[in-house]
Image (cartoon, rainbow, N blue to C red; front, top):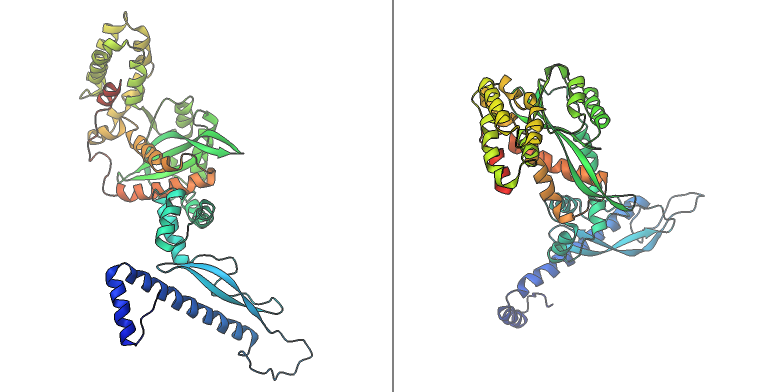
Length: 412
């Protein structure tokens, strides 16, 4: 590529070439910028070596010493990628004794720190490692490999881990949404379906916050007990917790009541309705769903109880399994009536945490398989932090949700 000089005829000729293909003007700028950056950084590295040796190039050493002196020993080529410029070919000077190590560009550093942050944000925001490789090839002239993306992102893990395990001392939590979500994850050279346990808290100001993102068996009561004990160790005020909203995971309600003695349990009405309707013949699902709606969306506990009695009387002979399924948990399904009416829509189901799980799935879908527990924490904590920011403007009880039973009958 030609460069612009002060020679008028050559400048006119170059102008004609550029007008035939205007894009070449930007190529010309890229080449000039790279060349300038390469020369400038290489000169700075030379000056750094001079400062290390205590003398400039070709300067005589007048020091009187019996110890052998160190000298320059040529240079080696190093590729280094810089934000907004691309990949540079640098000449890094060496000393004869191998003692010199640049503070400007570390020995194994391959990227401008600003570029590392951009790569991490692209990855955490939803781009797969393959997508980052394609974009990096176009933007900076060099493909960033999946391994390099993972290496860059390791620095984020420590910060995310501090947030994930932070103290809960300053949170006044009154309600908890408790659930788990499964991910395909690499474990000991195998791909397994591994659950992540999630607990979302609601503060006294009705703001939602993440309390727990932890790998573990969601169907294990002992695992949930350890999760709750860990929250206590992080100084959660147990006495302030008055309600736990959850699905019917084995043993979870019992463990929750033991660890939070001042709290009641609300069973997710959507999951209960799903369980009941799974025992109903297809042709009668809509009719039974309407009857369940009369129970779950009654204006008071008394009316809900009366509607349940009607439900049991109507279907006991035809569908005893469905009636038994509901009667076993009816008390826990109606717990929300003990709390402020403006919050009923938010605390009768686990929809809050279901939306979180959906967002987790959406973000991890491009990856198909998570690299491991540390990788999962890094991604999910980033998504969680973004959701917490959005939650600041949407306290519970102040928005409407699609009726859970309607959602079920639409998909049944």
